[in-house]
Length: 537
Length: 103
Image 1 (tube, rainbow over the protein chains, first blue to last red):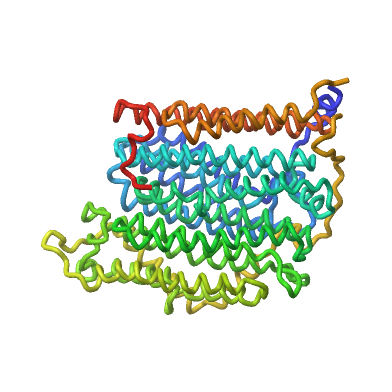
Image 2: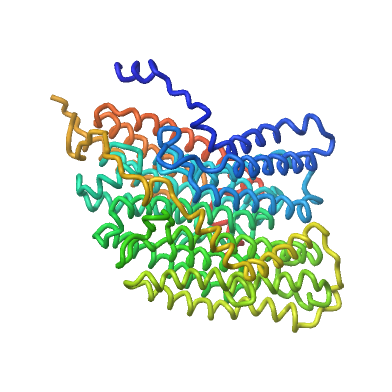
């Protein structure tokens, strides 16, 4: 009892210096409260909630950029949460993207959503955003689990939000079943990390693994398998990808867009931070556990990309096609995450603290965000006009709505990774860094190159429908919601601009590709006493 | 002096988890499937408490357990709500009845 008394005796109350870097998350929480209160004060509840969510996200973005990154070396909130530039750029991207999702909702689903469903919808959306932003800034096992669940639980409901839609309910069922199984697996595996090393802090665990303490290779393997299962579920990495196409088809389009970028991006960012913590503790040497981890993630990434692209060929539903496309892109990004060591030295530049895989991932995510936002916006508007999600609904789109047609063209060509769009530089950057890493990473470059060429076939099927197929008699021209058209056109323009401004964007991601406690600050020794699994007190 | 060592607790946790996992994979009744995930979470909590107790009385494991209980409860309430919704559509709890999305 004495330790309980001791813990209660001096409660820990975080001050402003601790909470300052997390004002953005605070704004998201305030927004959730505001969303629940807003319906009492407005007659048009859905619209009111849309505006509150928009205002909250704007406030979060401004405060995020205003507060910036605290001086390195300090660990706010006793190291439970981490504020660094890597997390900051991801959060900024996430919030910008969520604003895009809000506009997408406004231009498509808003008109058919029942008045009064808005508060729930936006509460869930902002709650998931909060979880995804927390996923980027923690290496504490408890906080990882909490953040992943905070992102997952609202996503399950969002997937089945169209209660009367039969496919929506089925999608939600598959999502929640699979998600519960994967999260149980992940937490069970993580208990062994806690058990073996006596701490919830991944950094301390990594240093003990490096120190050779309690080498239980089997338990360590189980722990990492569980971690990859839990995060792989968020990323939709093979073999945890089965939910992805079904949920994408069953959910409404703005939810699909949200999951395709925010959920996967958060998973990748978390995976990178976790693996980098281990790589840094092992000083990026080609030592046994690190090599196994890097190869596992690299091979998983290659398989994910290949499976995604192969399955995409057979799809006629545009949302299923984009689902498999997003699985493939998650695979490419996992290849970047697999860069845990190289033969020439550190992945983190000692002088500048820039982390090479983090830079690649941030750059790719920045571009990927606009590609998917644009593609889903066009798909949503075409669905609104035709009532069909089939690729044939795009027939003759260039005559029916040239702006949307060209925006879709930009997104599709960018997704393939061809110039003159930003997808080209993102993929080029990824492949160059993989190539320069030495070792066996050229194999991943080859896999990505072959996959990109193969993926061109199914992306071009959409383009052929848009540009070459004649529009059917029942497919008249349509205008589309101006906000949605602006969103699609803006995404297309952004893809062109980011190719023109490739070097500033690259410099920006390089500037933000720094992680606290990784590559910079000296590692502090673990203070906690530890026991082996077989020891009794 | 203590006849129960850490391994015993871990064994119970592992058994619960594996029973849950096997049930989750093999059973096709939706409610039983969700009960099996609950069983998996209980295996997790036993592990956490046992590790916490045997690790120098570290409270981290027990604190974690409370969070895991909350997560399990949230997931169960969400899932059972969904089961009710689905049951109204087809009047069956068989998971195989929902096959319109082709996985």
